[in-house]
Amino acid sequence: MVNALEVERLSVRLGAAEVLAELDFTVAAGSALAIIGPNGSGKTVLLRALIGALPHRGAVRWAPGTRIGYVPQKLDIERDLPVTGRDFLRARASVAGAAPADAARALDLVGLPAQSAGRRIGALSGGQFQRLLLACALVGRPSVLLFDEPTSGVDEPGEERLYEMIHRVQAAEALTLLLVSHELSVVYRYAENVLCLGREHRCLGPAREILTPETIARVYGEAPRYHHHDGR
Amino acid sequence: MDASGVALSVGMAAAAGLVGCFAVMRRMTLASDALSHVALPGIGIALALRVHPGLGALAALLAGAALIWGIERRTGISTETVVGVVFSLALAVGAMLATGEELVDALLGAPGTLGGWEVGLGLLGALAVTVFVLVERHRLVLSIVSADIARTSGVRVERLELAFLLAFALTVALGLRYLGVLLMGSLVIIPAATAKNVARDLGQMFAVAVAVATTSTLGGELLAARLHRPTGPLIIAVTAAAFFGSLLLRRR
Image (cartoon, each protein chain N blue to C red):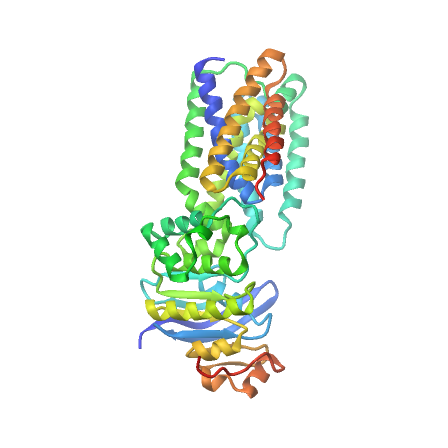
């Protein structure tokens, strides 16, 4: 299988602290990799190093022609910033070299009504804003999606819908997905592989092998919120 | 005021309105005010060397913009603090270099008579800033909402920041003649802040900021000629009146 991403001996230092050390993994094209771990284990740092936003040692190799759609964890947006969802999508379409119609298609994919896209981004609810960010990531037909806690700021039913949507879009567009999440039940359901970044313990493998109570306890140091969902 | 004088003040004010939109959205209100002060030592040195003061101001401003950029790239330093200290020092040094009437003109602005080449260069500068902001607006918007989204969209964020700060410095240099080093930062910030209060989207913000900046500049100049007062304070008084008016219309 072709790899969308190959990471070799990746190390990231923030000030005096080595946040990631000698990390190796690959992500097969079209597959979903979940990145889990306790707070402060370097999940966001890993994503930001992968997109070249942080200086690092080691190699990060994306497949030739990779187009990345990135959904960041939290954005510090002023409520009264006079930028509407439409302004934002138009900006992304222009910069990514996509046709303006691509923005409408992305809105459709994430199910955000045109009326909401016409409002200022600071005035959107948490769920609407996450959908807008997802739509933005989908403009320009990316081949890889990177999600950093896509459901932060979203209530529980909204969270469920958002993950369903991400999964639907990933399948429809044959995307490679890298997903940081605290929701282990979601990880279990949607990700083929799991990379855990514990402070003491790191592991990588298929979700069914990794997500055992023993491994989770070792990664998190205690039992986190976790329950298997059946089917659905 | 002749036609070329009007054209130059309109061009300068339009550039200030546009650059200001992104300065306000980047939350660099205080830094931009402080940055305009750095022009003063440039003017002082230019006068001592018998060079055109506008060139001294421009050189100092571009250096100041590069300095802010350098500071912002380093983590762990409080940008506002360093900017405040360095540029207040620049104001102090500049005040020691220039004296008397020169100093008052440099601080508050004095349009005087313009040479043909001054008008030409000024219009060229205003055009360059306007084109830069309009062409780069999509990249600027993405990097304001999220630098990481901009980065993954192919924007070279650090380079864009430097280009923006240089455009900002050029805009301040263009307006010094009218507003002086103390007030030019305000012509960049206040019209954009006014526009932010009333605009529903980015297009409206640009339109309102440019309209407020150009009408206040022309209105301030007319009042200054009539009342025999320095232009800078009157331009700012008019634009500040627009700002307070916009608070009444503010969208929630």
